[in-house]
Amino acid sequence: MEIQNSNLVVLFKSGTTDDNDPYLKALESHGYHGHCIPILDFHFINLDLYTQLLRKLDQYLAIVFTSPRAVQATRLALNSTDTPLLLIQSVKCYTVGKATALAAQKLGFQTSGESTGNAELLSQFIVEDSEQAKNREVLFPCGNLCRDVLCETLKAHRFSVTEVKVYETIVKDDISDEIFMITQSKVPVDSLVMFSPSGVPVLTKTLKKFPQLSVNSVKILAVGPTTEGELKKHNIPVYATLRRPDPQSLIDCLQK
Image (cartoon, rainbow, N blue to C red; front, side, top):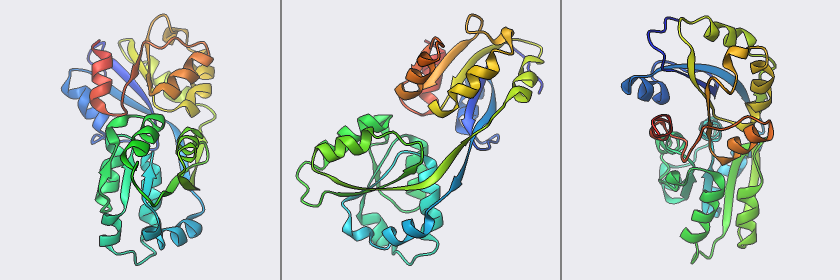
């Protein structure tokens, strides 16, 4: 990896990335060098059950997506159903973040709520947006590490939530090799960006092996308040927290 200046921003994200990653493109356009280290992986579960629920999509007021993986699971499940596009377009669809919204829109869903930024704010948005709705049935495909805040808020406001786990999160045991490669670049790292609270423990363990990446020498950024809280729980000071999970929020935090 050839680094030309000192503005290296390392993103600890999920899955694989490429040059079309919107965060990498945003960093490049603002004069930063971005590098991704995949820290989480996923595999899908309960797709047969989820497929059966999607066949009854018209019984729900809304479907809620809080991650792109939930949308990916929906795409796989829809491929084995004959759910008409008109039905997909007619059910309300609430999402967190632009990436999740765009993925849902590609399946035909009409999305709203993406600017809320996290599940807690999205749940409040749903409550306000559906205040007059008689049908209060909500379908919520999510991951095995999903927090309870969205379901608890909706249930407290008399919504009936069908929660189905459609993917499992797998945290890498060790990212030392990837971190070592970063430390061999010609210039120091400027910032580390943590996207998920699930990866914080392995990041904390790994950084202890590399004193040149101590919290006194690099900025630590968190995507969302839950990740911020997990970092602070591990005594990692947070330089800034992205208000929303989107590239512009990252740039705003880096330039603050």
